[in-house]
Image (cartoon, rainbow, N blue to C red; front, side, top):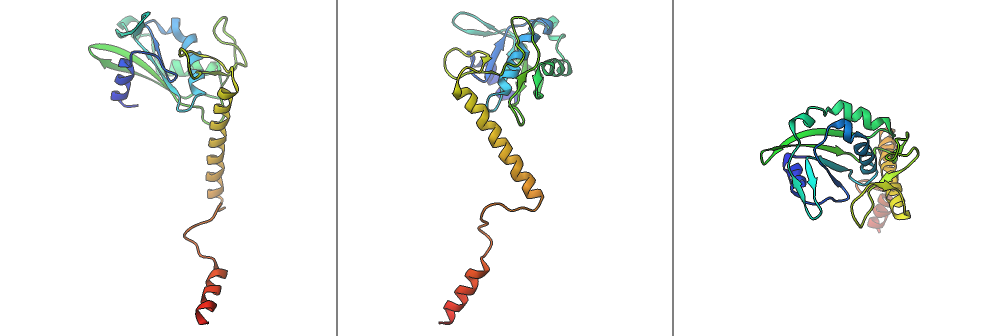
Length: 200
């Protein structure tokens, strides 16, 4: 993501399916909730972003930034390692820092799953449940929860099928297998027929 896109998300003012805000806090305090959101965002098309440094009021979100003490507790390698203690398969994420309107913010960008939806593989009391398949549902207040409807499950299945087909076509191409009709090839039987027709 570009700096401009991150700044746009900071100023968005409200959470979305693909966007979650967290107030400034040390990594140790937020890490389990962040991990749950990462697992969920990995399971939605195009993934999502968590912005740390935005206070959530009853009517509006206030981008105040992350204080320097909290900022020092974040490290991309630690975040990646911790989130993936709970993820099966692996969740790909990036952690970055950006200055905006005189304040420092952190962002985690979570990519959609690579081949198969991400399942939670460990429990953490009152936050994470082993074997749960987390998502960010459509409609209502943006939140992270386990899959609760066929439409949420269908989205994950569709994305997995698309990825599987792309992988199959790439592998077939490397093996020299051409699938489908090629518009730039000619049919030798058609050529012979056209030649005979031309002679009449």
